[in-house]
Image (cartoon, rainbow over all chains, first blue to last red; front, top):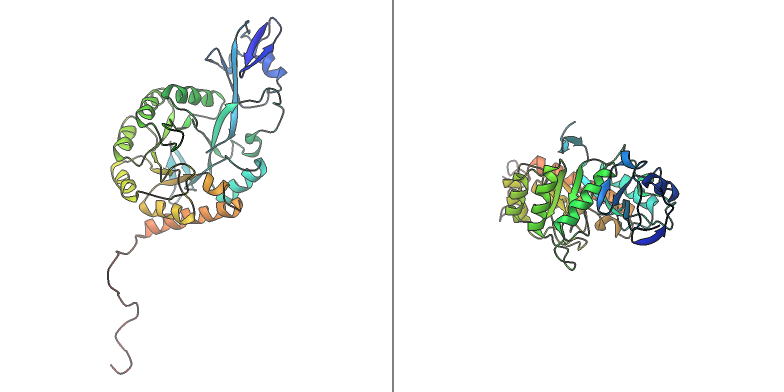
Length: 66
Length: 258
């Protein structure tokens, strides 16, 4: 199935959770925040929340800024 | 702690808050922050680069256990975008402080004050410690204080302009009217600008470009630390009145031939 991550289309397997995606992107030990279809997904739900076809995922982190 | 700066219930020794943008690399960012003596640093929230996510991260260089990380909502042009960014920043696990910016125009980067007030109202209700970036506008400052912001942050001049404090009189009025900390945010160009802000009685100064854009950012970071300290001490000491005519420093008594 196809999802959009930070504006880029990606194919992911059925049954992929938010935690799987974070692991796949090597973001495990980062301070990140995740939005799924404009709703924030709290950390505790990463392992249970499944991605669905057409989902829009945003993954953000801190960068230099003023 | 003598002469501590208290923000959102936490005490700080340093009255200089620095941004982390526009540096060559994270190592330079850290060196500049160290030289500035700042205990609070601002950061922005952006998308992770998902094609190359394995790289180093800013927070590898600025330990959140040591520095208070102040996420901003820079680049947001609506209250909704700013609220969304603040919520994401909190979820990323840094805390509830947020530097609220709702920009009104990309040329001046002046704030959209009504939208800032709208966003502040929502974020305060959700438990954020909101630090709004505003014009040097005493009315806006008062409204934001009344709705529960943890500080107000009037600009000295446009972001990144280096023009210094363009309206010290408005800053003084804001200082007279507000009880929450007043932090001059944006527009400082050099150490004397920072000193002037502190001499006016501001609680702290926030800057980024003035340090990061200097020829030698590390040296400028140190200069800003000293400028803020000098200005603060001068404010506490109480300056002399300005007078039109001279007053001799040496005694008249005991002059030769008198």
